[in-house]
Length: 428
Image (cartoon, rainbow, N blue to C red; front, top):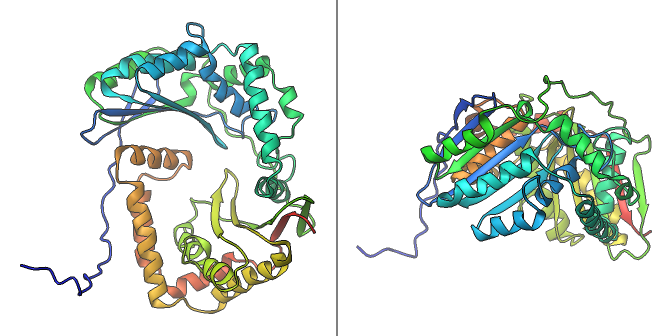
């Protein structure tokens, strides 16, 4: 039968679907192991999550460089040997540090998992923090920092963190160039000794996970306690101290454009309203067809791109609007952002717009759970945020069930009419 290509296919909404949950087991030394077996390609991902992020550090840069230096050598391997072995087996190692956790992620072929996982074990359990490599890595990152200092977007983010949280809060504790001079191998070893141990981590395996892979992980990471295991400590509480002035201006006289950021404290991911607030933020500025993009980019031409989203921190959420624009457009742009907030507080969102946003978010959710590696990333984020195991299903139902009346109510509740923090970086 010939297809009529002049007729548009019927558009149907996405039906709720179940999200594959990791199989969980406790290894002999007490480390939880989460296993997601999916896919036919013989590739494995190994994630080791350590409760050692910026929140726990005593000095700026301490957490991030402790994590980065792991690949620079161990008791058994030099930095060159680490790189050569991973390269020889076609593996990739990624290191990252967030607010509450640091992470080691290994991607490798199934047939070489035993060899490459042994490299990860060596650098995780017995890093050497060689002084010459610490100095080299610090200098390279200092140069990148100096390059970033020339970007108004970088200055704007630093300014917003300081203005929103205060200098004594982990989020407001922004690094400066002199902080690179204060980092020493001893400082990194101290942080490692306190937080990198078998009582403060979890492990995820995803992809082509066979029995021998699980056995190898237990052999390398889960048999005996490693590191100086300490009792769990509740994260320290820090007061949030926003700036008294509504606007912070950071001068950069040679800037080609100004960075504009507007922020306000709001609810966290755990709050019952959050999943529907996420829909509101998407309408406001969370996708290419959002209110902010349609008005400020398409109609006014003030910026190439503008976004709005909510960030989650251990003690608060932060709603943030961010963009870059010409100096002359700063004030009218900010005015239009406030105007769009007022429209959402007073007007109902149209049926077609709401349906489009719902389909967009559901598509993004589906993409987050479509493969083994994306599933692993999603479940790691759920663990970090301490969300319940049925969070994926609840998030889909919240998106499908939200109404225009609910979104207007949420805008009235969570879009403040005053007290929004404004940060502008650029020239006058």
